[in-house]
Length: 485
Image (cartoon, rainbow, N blue to C red; front, side, top):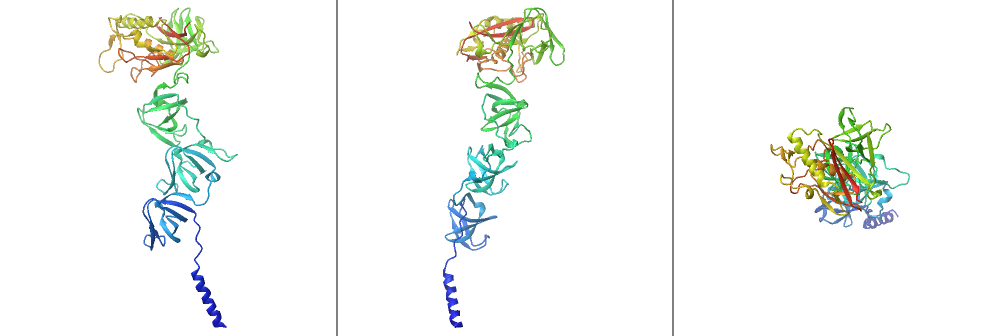
């Protein structure tokens, strides 16, 4: 009997050796990035089971550190993990089920195995693709990609939204406002593009001196800008030379809409709005752009590069500026003033004022028909003695020449420029004198003209004609723009 049992046991064991072990379940698939050896064990010196070619699909049973346990022609083996990419779950997967948040990749983006830029790349996102997020972090975001967990750099994912009702996106990850480009501006110094209005927030890109960026808005010290598809915040003080895309859009940053043209009926004193220092006394008959009266009935006004203030407004008659969309024929729709030395004693002063008055007289009651263009030089150039000009001071940083025929005419073009910035008049061509600007206008708001293409060119985008009214009295040059009769 014992002999029979022994033989039966031996027989069953032999049968057992002939039954293959159950195949291990495939958890993931991946793609070989190079010709890859499959080993018997997790060692480059262990026995070789075979190899796969670059681009071949690898079936992964288990991830184990630097090695993947794989199925190779029905055998279990191991391959080096760093040479496998585009990992995905083997079975059906839905990344949205595991995700808490979602965002958008702002560039082609690698998914890493660990929170380390040098760790293994396991897959990637294309620019503009939705990123499903399982974990938020300052530098790294946990993601789920094709059912496979991993990490991506937080710097390149924007527009983060919650995918679970009742779960809110933390403030530091909140979706920024949708970007609409209203202006362009020039960068004047290398600076950082940040994800938030904070110099310590995530760095999105570096903006370089002389770069042109698109600008949506200025919010305090920060500008919301876009450069090469990257959207974020940059310090506004390093942006200059703004240009408006749409003449019906927001006013260029720094532009002020003045609601009244004030005519003096007697002497009026202008003081520095900050220090209270007397700046000048304006005589009867002058017209100035001013603000609405405050509670004390005082008004403010543009004075060179500062703000002036008139406290005693008894000697002012106010003409109201109408909003352009509501203006009737004959209504005032924009006004701006600049100031010059009222004393005309020296030959230089006399020549400058003469040239300024040439511009006033040549543009008086001129205008622009709806949809038509206006070139300043068509009315005022050439700036020569033969054309009625005298020598006056000029801005010149390239030579020692400081006087030339027409010197002073730029104050007329500058005053006109600042007036039309307040309404839908498109600026086709505009130059500043230099990066230093000029004393009688805010920095970057001057308009240089000279013979040739150094011109101020405009187009009337309004649905009606406009007319210019100019006056130079008592040291005040004012340009008013009216809806034409």
